[in-house]
Amino acid sequence: VDPFSKKDWYDVKAPAMFNIRNIGKTLVTRTQGTKIASDGLKGRVFEVSLADLQNDEVAFRKFKLVTEDVQGKNCLTNFHGMDLTRDKMCSMVKKWQTMIEAHIDVKTTDGYLLRLFCVGFTKKRNNQIRKTSYAQHQQVRQIRKKMMEIMTREVQTNDLKEVVNKL
Image (cartoon, rainbow, N blue to C red; front, side, top):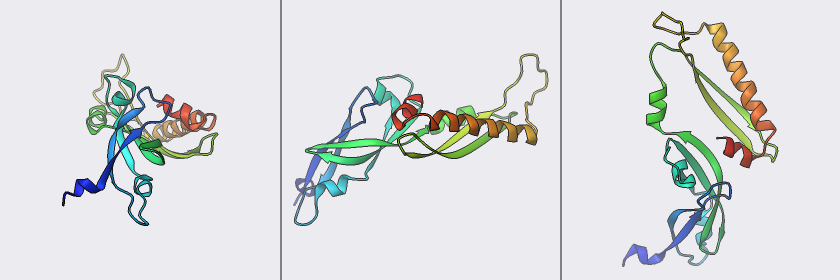
């Protein structure tokens, strides 16, 4: 017996904040007895490139969308996370500079708790002769503090939809 004969295809729909609503399709085993198909779909996470969601060429941002509701044959998703592709991350990290990382948990105006990670780099000045552009520990701490202030300010005053649009 073919295992695919017991499965149904569901359309995956992106949240309204994106231009392209239809992401793709997903398989799930049909409702049988006490096992309901929509329960198998809820909580499923899809990773989609921002280029696919916005009809764009630049494709280094990846969005995670989690299924929250099933209506008919449609899976309705919500924002679950954002990440950069590995090649983009590797291209940003270079020798002879300081990498400064910060993370913070911030609540949006509509009650979502987001954990934000941020990466910053020192850069050469225009008139600099020295090969390296390292920051001292105290400077790193000040920069990290400023990064956290900016992230907190930008997220606390907005709801989830506005935050995702900023990303």
